[in-house]
Amino acid sequence: MTKNLKLALIASDTVKAQEGAEALLAAHDWVQPEQADVLVVLGGDGFMLHVLHQMLDMGQVRPVYGLNLGTVGFLMNRHKSTRTIADRVARAREVAVVPLMMTAITRDGQELRHFAINEVSLLRETRQTAKLEVKVNGKVRMAELAGDGVLVATPAGSTAYNLSANGPILPLGSGMLALTPLSPFRPRRWKGAILPDSAEVVFRVREPDKRPVAAVADQKEVRDVAEVRIAVARERQLTLLFDPGKSLEERIFAEQFLV
Image 1 (cartoon, helix red, strand yellow):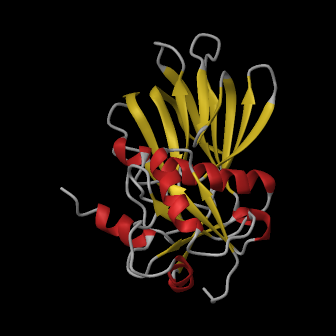
Image 2 (cartoon, rainbow, N blue to C red; image 1 turned 135 degrees about the vertical axis):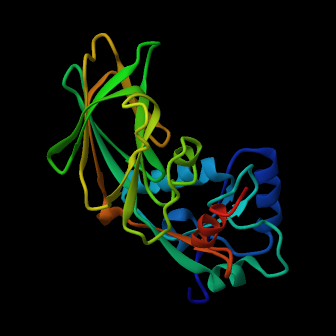
């Protein structure tokens, strides 16, 4: 990044983040978010996703540099440093993150669209097992997947819910998506698939009246869906900034060697 960038400060409403913001306010001349070249976000991964989704929804995408004042901070940089915030942002490395677009069609015919930076998941709403038809690029690949549900994860999201569901970790830049079942009952031994990110994935809910299913794009839920279409939204590419040697790509790489 170049120097003399206009920075805006956005902090979550937690005590820890607000205290961090108070300390930073006197250390730099800040501008309003709509005037900024870069957004500096204080909080955890959940708040970072919230800010990124706000930008996607408003169509005003700009680079984001996160400082971890939350819990996990996988998408964030460490808070403490001897360098000024302006210097840290100027030295930061850019990482491109491409979100998914979820198009969910409800049982009553309503069509809703939401972006997902981590994953789109389909989840059973009741004790009844969900039954889903899985179609990739217009071809039915699985006539019936029975279980708790299924998800499609981006590389950036492959270490989140996808990893907890025993899905594969995908390196950034791999051009792949993870298709991972959630507690599959039939076929019991199916572990999922790795797809090119050019693929369109369509899930059709079987017996939706008896086996209702919800679709979730990161933090946004649509209940009682009949069909869900998922594709990469390349025109809404996001840019995250990381300190040198601490990039998201390195964190994803390192995660594969944790025991």
